[in-house]
Amino acid sequence: MAKRLRIALLVESSRAYGRDLLRGIAAYARTYGPWKFYYRERSIDDPLPEGLRRWKLDGIIVRLVNPQTTRQAARLGVPIVDLYHDQPAAGVLRVLPNREATVRLAVEHFFQRGLRNFAYVGFPGVHFSERRSERFVDCLKQRGFPTHVFQGGKIEQAKGLASVEHLTSRHAGELARWLQGLPQPVGLMACNDMRAFQVLDVCGECGIVVPDAVAVIGVDNDPVLCQLSDPPLSSVDPNAQKIGYEAAAALHRAIEGSEPPPDVTLIEPAGVVVRRSTDVLVIADQDVVNMVRYIREHACDGLTTQSLSEQAAISRRTLERWFAEHVGHSPSEEIARVRIERVKDLLLTTELALEEIAPLAGFEHLKSMHRLFKSRLGLTPGEYRKSCKTPGAGNERESQSVS
Image 1 (cartoon, helix red, strand yellow):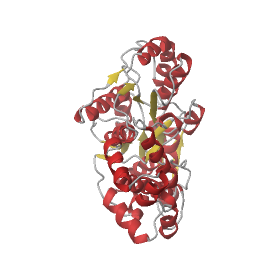
Image 2: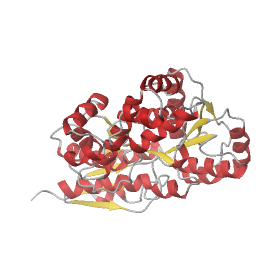
Image 3: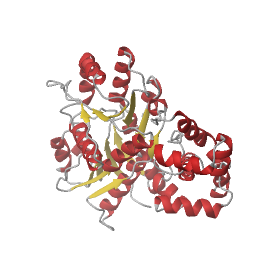
């Protein structure tokens, strides 16, 4: 009988991201265990539990803001996997979200909506927020667009992220004045869902219309915060359950010593979960706006470029010209994009077979869906589903709307 490993989980349960990490870890342990977990409810800012050495651990999975605390855990002399820090530490494995990809998804989401003004709001002085800001600015700079970054609201004496989030709300007036000075319409990325929630609250208080004037996207896809927001918040899903699952797998390999895991493993985000806070389409021609919306509503119902031109009562040549001028690609490309997003949605949120998904996404033949999907994503539908889902974690992810 395999040894029952003793694993300490120093992962916060105070927010949805940490709870999803724990779900992924639990899914791995159910498959490859049994494991005995040493776990206490905690926040991300809490210190190491007292008496950790007495637990006679085989390994540790940590998500601690303070790098010194992580190094202290590493001195216990057992394999350790860190789920927070970008910077390497001796003897510490890291399994992290691909933060570059997270930012790219948000940027691409804004571009798909025709937005060409961009802004970022974070928690000044907080490491992860500053790094996300840098990535957002760099990504847009590469495309030739400047970014407006909110520099106010810095909290000098706050202890921990929860304290920063609370105290930052006192700077609502400063944030409101900054938001009112932005060029509109603007796509605004917040460092996480809580900061996005605060931005939406300020917009509501000072009469800024969301998403028409300011389209807001967060990160973490916290279902409670996203639904409490007014309007409901779009957010990048970082695939936290898969991160937790892969962290447990990396720790298991390190304990067994059979296959040395890489020093750092990056997990791709699951996608943008689209809600009303970014439901905007910035196109000067209202007729084209109406046609794009029609495509989004009917692309999976067998819509073709020809049937679209007939519905709009214009020639196909005129239709193609309007789309090239205002959307930047053809109507057939937009139809294909919406169908692929529908396939991705069904792959991630259902257990339907590919043969069942194809007609629901508007494809007459499975082969045509397979060919188009692989040409766009570089993966087959089956490979995409496997790469984004956490084995054994069930199907708890919220449905993703078409972007």
